[in-house]
Image (cartoon, rainbow, N blue to C red):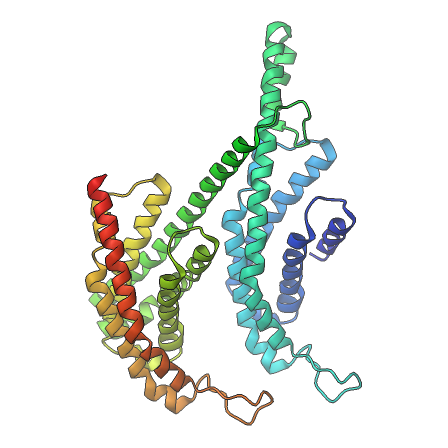
Length: 437
């Protein structure tokens, strides 16, 4: 991992074409995780996220270094290795980023307790540094910075396959000439060359006109977008299916008191994964407007982490059951709908109807359950003062989680009708389009 520092130097001196804008954040975050988190805080070593992190890093780097090793040593790389080099990131990058963010979050309490790498005043430099807050800042910049790196990979994917297309045309013409009069050995060479296509620019190959290249780039981008969204929707669908199954088994076995304990792990995964939908909307991967996506995802995350996870006293209340029932029905239908749509280009009419009709019942039930659980948690917030910041402190700033939650609950009054009316408009538009189709 320490050798990765040399790649930044390679970009600076022009030994490779990789821009420093993509190399620096990627290498910097890897080094921060390796030395600043894993090496510095051994308490993180036993967590399951270490496994997913190392798997995603290992597959990425084995493919990448073998690809560039063959390219630099022999002047070519097999087409299957090229495909792996510029395709595996679609699964491994989200996995790696989620694991990195998770491990930083896990390490925060140990940073706070140990004050490792902190510099306190007074000192001869008249300067202070807190590694805990530096790590929180690194969490905040992960979404824009790593999103930029992913976009760089998508551009590289297009460029790589465009060069393969040019070379494939050249190899095909050579094969046609060889087939006329070459012997069996030449035929063998003709057959094997497509498996080891050079990635160097070919001046003799015809270039597509600019309009055709733009169309090809748009087509490649569309395929990548659909592939990524297909994987994302099916993965989250599986998470919500596990929530639903665990909830049903708990209700049949021990009643509503046991629902949250049975579904907690699956719920935290499935609901937290929805953060990506905000990024999808920002990047234009989906047509959902931020004005409806942000309040919906924020409200769900607040209930999941800020109420249910933070205050275990709420787990035994009956409102947990209608909350999970409404969420599960909504999300199982929604993610299967978009999973089928992105994977196959169509959706069954009955699933379309469910997608744009079940909210009529599930939204009000979910909203009432959410507001009720916030209200139920109020006494526990007041007594525990969890997440509160009192003055005096070095920031001269105070925060009361109780009043913040009361304010958040009040927002349901204007936000819920807006989201409901948005879904009614979407229903009318989708079902009318289906009738005319």
